[in-house]
Amino acid sequence: MKGWKRWKGLLAGLSLLAGCGTVPVEHYRDEQPAMDLQRYFNGTIDAWGMFQDRSGKVVKRFYVRIDAQWNGDTGVLDEHFEYSDGSRSRRVWTLTRLDANRYRGTADDVIGEARGEVQGNALRWQYVLKLEVDGRTWEVDFDDWMYMVDDQVMLNRSVMSKFGIRLGEVFLSFRKRT
Image (cartoon, rainbow, N blue to C red; front, side, top):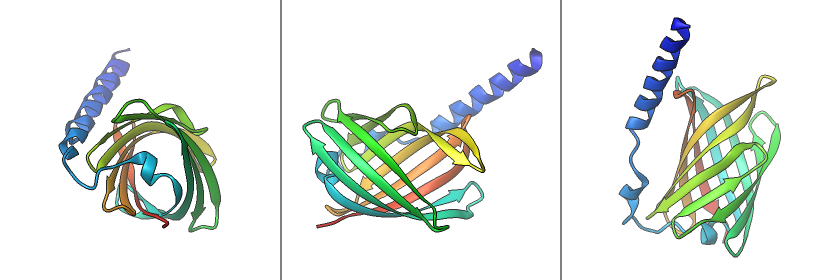
């Protein structure tokens, strides 16, 4: 029992440390162009990305086509992934605008709900994803940060972690089709 208490204390400490370095989304309140999820994620968006493990090694590269549409305060983002190894996958997000700055989202491989907040040109999006790795399913925490560059380009950096320990990062560049 003593060993478990020590591990529990260590994990709690690591989780606390992991949260200490995060800039609050309010920091971006005055940055332009302003993030408008309903406007940006409406139509077709192309994205290119990669996953780097915690050592910095690029493990996977991918392309995503997102077909998005909104009906009032509810949006559907239909994401089609093509990976550098030839594999494909799909995720369909259902987003709900809760108020002027807050959103929630669901998808089949997301545990519970994703929570997001928009301020200025930034969106912070947090959720737990079921991730398939070598035939096993892991529940991994995602801390997504998206930043509008202009009306067509958005950049995304996601930190993946488990038990507060950083596993790697996902980087994406989005381009809205005109």
